[in-house]
Length: 273
Image 1 (tube, helix red, strand yellow):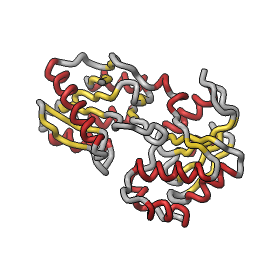
Image 2 (tube, rainbow, N blue to C red):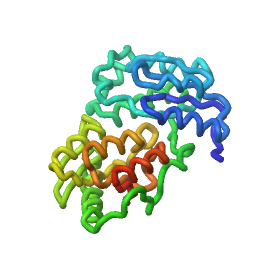
Image 3 (cartoon, rainbow, N blue to C red):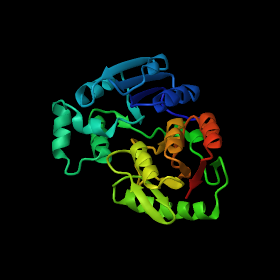
C-alpha cells in the first residue's frame, strides 16, 4: 500500500489512465480526489470515481490552479495525455500566456514544467503518479505473445539505442526499425501516427519492430510512457511484429486485453533496457 496524501488533485487528460489512476489511488488510501478535466479530452466516466470534477478548456491555467487552491488541494498529479496539437491550438488565459511567452522552447516537457512551477507558486505541488501505478509498470524479462526471433531481437536492441538517442535530442520517444534500418521516428504527430506510418514503410510483408522509451532525465510528473489495447490494435493494423517498451519506466494498461491482442495478431510485446 502507498502512503501518501489524504487529498489529491488529478489533472486528467484523455484515454483510460485517469480512471485507472483514480481507482488505484482510492484503493491505496487516498480519501479525497479532486479532478480537473479537459473538455473534449477527458472521459466523462471519471466523474464517478472522484469526489469533485471541474471541467476546463486547455489554456485556462488560472482556473485550474484556483480549482485546487480553493478546495484545499496541496498535491496533484497529471494522468493521461492532452493531444499535442491542443497545446498549440489553445486559447491561453493571461497567466498561461505569460508562461508561454517566457518559454524559449515549446514542447510538452517545457510547457508542463512551467505549469508545475506556476502551481508551486500558489502552494500546489505537482508530484509523480508512479507510486500508485507500479503494478502497471512491467520489469525486465516481461513478454506477451510470440517469442522473439534472433533477427527481431537484434532489431529491438538496435531500436532501443536509436530511440534513446532520439529522445535525448527531445524529438520523440518511439522509433520503428526493420532489418537494421530506421523506418520512422516519432515527433510532433505522436506515437499512434508514428506506428501507422512506420508500418506502412515496412512494405507489404510488414514485420517492423517498434521501440518506445523514456527520455533521458525523464520527468515522470507529467509524462509516463504509456501503452494499452489501442496501441496493440494500431500495431496489428500496421502489421508490426514487435512492440518493445522500456522496462520499469513504462505503463502497460489493460493487460488482459493486450495479451489477447498480442496472441491473436502474433505481436511480441516485450520490455527492453
